[in-house]
Image 1 (spheres, one colour):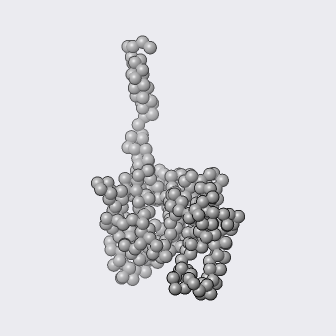
Image 2 (cartoon, rainbow, N blue to C red):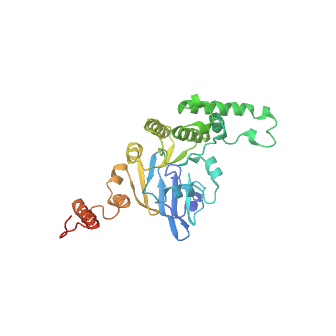
Image 3 (spheres, rainbow, N blue to C red):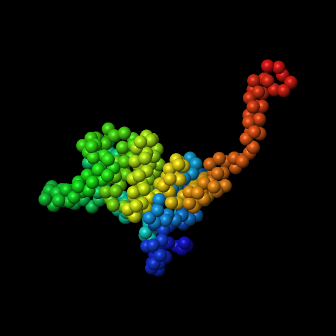
Length: 297
């Protein structure tokens, strides 16, 4: 990985297009005395499904926010398709082809499902102040956008909800709507923040199928998830964070067997003899009850 991303791009590095879709160096984010993210280097492989995992508070969502322009780092540099994203606002990042969903869905509850979908499209002529009064200038484009939205709603099995208010959808249906709306941009990279959180088992299988289909279309997927069964099922690559740092990465099989990953989730003393732990706990309980050795119940 080049030490200076911009210098590599300016030098015409031919590997940029074929290499990782995201490359980052020395990314840090602090909140007062707390260092939430301290990532020395990160690479997201192109055309693959990458899982970003780690215990609560590891810095996963903060890193998501930094990469997508929803937050500013204290230091560091990163690039998407060889283009530096330092200081680029979130809406411009999305226009470049990198979109994200949120753990808590961001649907517009008082608009219908189809209206939410139309809003996902970019470069709409009807949104320009000077063109808005002249329907003839943008009506054909709106028809094309609506047709694309209807195709996506059918794909995500939301076509029956087309005219319903988005606020009336279930939690799982809102996740589907967010994913479908993200595809209105025709993105190259889709970032999903805990896509399975709060989703019932029936819709979970549907969401899994849709995530896999994104990879089959040649898109890149990066997602945050706590469901290890899902991570094993669909991930090509796994990155593990703990205390703001990347502690391991590799295939799901490699990562699940890595002692550093086990320590991150279970603590450094996960290998203590269970019988000894049980004996200690039992002794403490008996002591609390006044039934330690030498005392009668």
